View 1 (cartoon, rainbow, N blue to C red):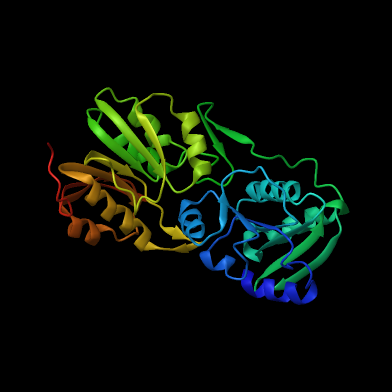
View 2 (tube, one colour; view 1 turned 180 degrees about the vertical axis):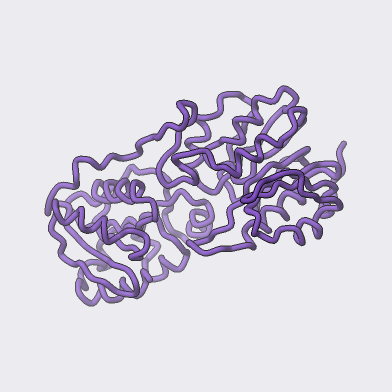
Length: 335
């Protein structure tokens, strides 16, 4: 756990986080990660709106891009090794002539990252604690591996571009493909892609003749950066927001979604349920929800609670596809 490892690091290097030092905190995983950092001298770099908004409200200087320098960079490494390398490159650039702190759980790959770095730089601290590691180096102690590259786009099927760290960054998600194949060609009106990611389903929707406009909504600005490149019509409005909090300007004719069901590496059924509830609140009384989920996930009860009709319309041994109609949470009528 980061906070436990941080407390040990502060005992070893007490001058690292003195009040006169500016800090860039990169990729926090939870709001509590910032509990011990002053909002006056800490810049938070995150592309997740679920952290960006509340931390901004708490007085932190939150950014989703880089145009500044600090004395110390703190990087909480993600599971994606390529994204981890990218963030370390970024942290080293930001902390020019300063310190870089990297932290992560052992089962997320930090051990191999540190081993690779040790061939090029010298660590001032490299300790294990609470099922993870935390390490510190000065940017002047060596050069990062020349094979590491920032912000490198991937290509899928010579058709779509993605970035490391976004969901399904190296292939078309099979659940999303199954849902796309079940969507009717005569979908019409105004709709939304909840959890649009890099835009696979949005791309399909924008090419349907009767669809007027689509809201592509995702918590990840990084994912939406890819979606913008993968969609090329004026029909799409890209929205950096939490689907569970978002409200459409006017009720929608349809929603499609492949909702996430993990939060901080753990199964979180309530996350997908929140997507379903939001769909019901954003749809017209005659609006429709098309949804794919892993077959073992028990979404049937929540669908019955928020929709008058819901049924499985397709799938395979891994996934099930639902059509839900007559949302019960809607109080607005079509004008």
